[in-house]
Amino acid sequence: MAEGGAEGGSRQRVGAPRGDPFGARLFALSEGLAVVGGISLVVVTVFTVVGVVGRTAFDMPILGDQEIVELGCAIAIFAFMPYCQMRAANVIVDFFTARLSQAIRDALDAVMNATFSACILVVTWRLAIGGIGAFDGSDASMFLRIPLWWGYAVAFVACVLWSAACLYSVRRSLGHMRAARAAVGAP
Image 1 (cartoon, rainbow, N blue to C red):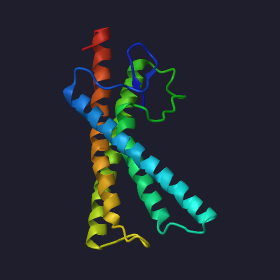
Image 2: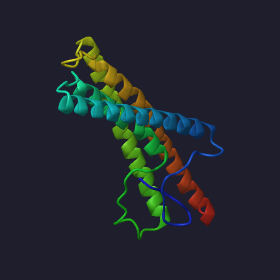
Image 3: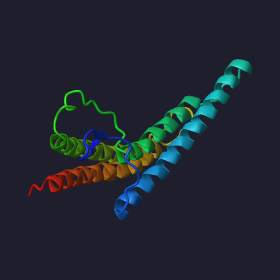
């Protein structure tokens, strides 16, 4: 889902929007959540090293270490996605579209961003349903008895932000299309 520019080629790694207070706030929130994801990965890494060293060197495994790693990695993954979306840094395959005109690529980007937005909105909705079910059922992890709805709740919050970033990407793609039309004098 690259954002195309009027000068041709694909624009990758879009920075914080300038002159757009909503986009700038959304970018800042996404960036902050990505930092939380990074901290989560550092904690998981340290925890994994301590667990492996304890298990192999001292025959003292950490009870439930896999549960914590699982939760921490899930938090990190969901925390990174809004930032990735705001930076237009998703993986793209432009093999088939590289030779198309910029206007067509902009239109394809808008359609793809709209389709992706719909998918993420469904994921967000299903996370809410799953989290409510986990909460109602008092589901918990096997060893540490960590309530499963905690993971759903963090993922849901991140997915709400990701949904907003996806919808913002649609708006940004449509803006590129309008700007390209205006540059060539089309109505």
